[in-house]
Image (cartoon, rainbow over the protein chains, first blue to last red):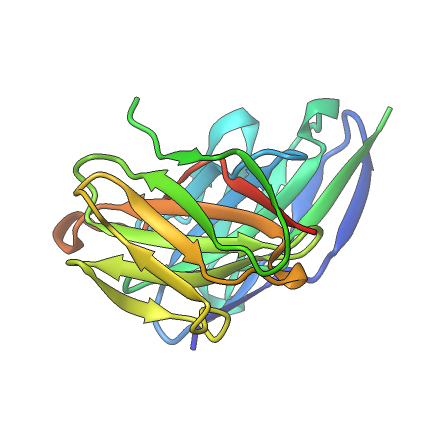
Length: 111
Length: 116
């Protein structure tokens, strides 16, 4: 069965610093991969998605993610974090009408 | 832009009571889902629904849970006799039919259920 691992439960970065959130997936073929963001008390907002083609995908709010098949990874990056980026980030893998989420990484942004 | 809407946004209920959470999926979508997120935990799959029947369900989705599409627009989740551990945020989602299904689920804002 497919699964998603987000190794970092909580990450703290300073405002303006770069960010990388890790995501590893387990699935036999190339799945569809997603990153969602959830602000406190809010729903899930899609940041970006990967289906095929260019392995570097751009999303909203200045985020990007790179699909690396050899590492089964789909890490989320942002060159310069803003205080408003503080939220919970979920990586998800989708196949055949089944979407599974990672445990999430909580991002704290220091002034 | 079309969106998935959920009601109520927050419901407080007594243990043992029945609860119905309502969702209006995007109108041309044919797959529907319920997910649950207990406070501070991951988003968990409950059930998927297609062609008026459950297509897949998780171990969480026991006999206390049921789903229905009563009128062609609403998609409901019923919890027959709520337990304390049912307190969570419940997310509804919908997606396109198979031929165009690229895996993108569109989520509602969620319904927070508090069981006392």
